[in-house]
Image 1 (cartoon, rainbow, N blue to C red):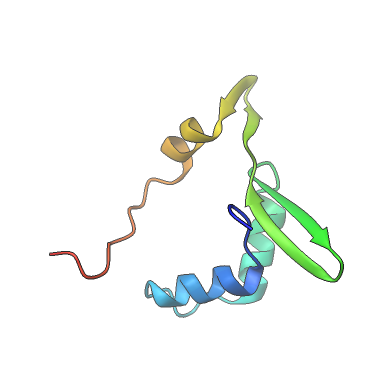
Image 2 (image 1 turned 45 degrees about the vertical axis):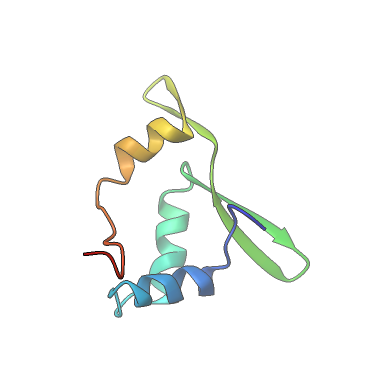
Length: 82
């Protein structure tokens, strides 16, 4: 489903971009610590993670595009582009 990923898929992606020491437990911890940014949906025995569409941060309501600018400051290199 678009916009949702399993924790294992997130871990595989982070490994793929070179963050090989990231454990499943570290991802689970980050999701718990930053629960204001992520929503977890359960479908049967499967858990899916998605960014929340908006959050309330310090009394201001922020929508997803604005969230990306504030929290995702590290750019991921595009593989295969010169």
